[in-house]
Image 1 (cartoon, rainbow, N blue to C red):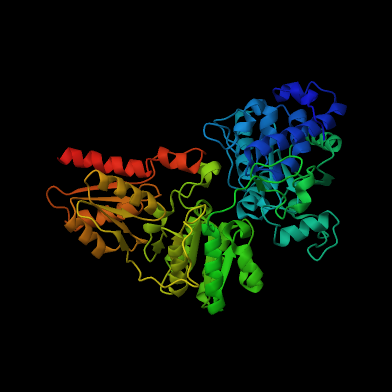
Image 2 (cartoon, helix red, strand yellow):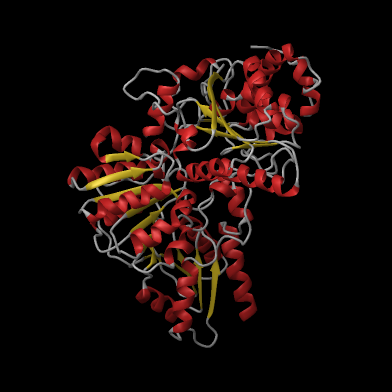
Length: 604
């Protein structure tokens, strides 16, 4: 691997790259891989996917006239080399930091990012939209979508290919086949791709006699080719670029996630995401956890419930490690189902299992469940099926930013009839809520919990079933009532302690349930305090809206009584340190105390 980067140093923008001779591209690729490794060693972030497309990145920007020609990267995990080549090298060590570069493609960041992407499987649809718009405008530029084999498991990719193949629109889709998403890919497509690449395994099947799946959908199929041979890539891309047939083309290239970095062999996820690390040894600078993560607590709790009830099953949409279900699978391999990147299918698949008396836990990040909202409504809620939703990464998530924040689940679930929605304030409460969900057979139920570590509390062997819709008081006071839902409880207790030192006595309650709300607790808090304030890690329309609606429509607010709601602001919060994010959101302990003091001062 090069220790200096003379060719890369001469490249500010792709136009500079295109001034080089073709025989220099291999050196550019080697230097770009080195620069990517050096950058991520400083910042951490998504890693293996970018290393796998270094040669493709060089070839694309060499062959096509970007940004006039559009290149759309699906998901955007793999776009760090692209950012280095498109004028952002000097800022590359600000990746995923406050005020720095996004970890994904972002339209506001560069004209070389024609479409923002952080959730998968959108590239073909957006590219087709751009290509059709080009036709309407009489343009002649090229549109290229780059999508991984894991992302091709999502229904949206097939919907777009079906549409593109029928229209015969000039469009290039590059399928980056690396046999790896965050986890190894699953499904029949994976077997089909193995057959096309000539791999003889239990997971392969030969191409049908009539051609490939892609040809059946109306695409001209090219490949498979070696995605790490930059010379071959350049030649093939030039031939496709100059083809006058004006048709949709699928280029199938085979790559290795994490290619070119020696620590790949020791990584189970092909270095999908890493902390800061030492380039020579590959050792990541991970601090020892002070407490188990909420994800781990959920997994352990679900395993305990499954050990006691053989009807408990687990479902994930290509995120076994991210949701902790890889641990569940080790214990119960026949009761864990990874359906691929297909959240809509995951939800309705869970609904089907629920109709047969099973207890499905559908574990999906809060932000990803948004992709399956219609299924949540029609296939689960309207039919009142007891599907259990475990929503990881609720609230703000730090370096992944707005696209991955779980900001809206309280609003989009609490408005649905038949739903029960819970949010634990600590890891013991999470264990209780997993047990509660397992025991709840009268309709759909969701538990949402944050990213990161718990508080380090002593854990019981198994959770206790909570009474539905009942909260708890954790600190008694007489002046102000703070009603917290979820992970801000410790901030609320800190605010109460500060206010106590200022002569303001606070009751602090843990709501536990966003729906149904604890009406008796709310009545008590309103009756016995001059002010009630709700705290939640969610957007407007969530828990505070439920409480406010109940107080107003039941005429509980008397003369002189004050109510306030504190929630996430009506903006998308960019990537940053989580502590700073909550400060920017106005949900820190100091913000809670200031809000209460300011309102009390107005009433004095």
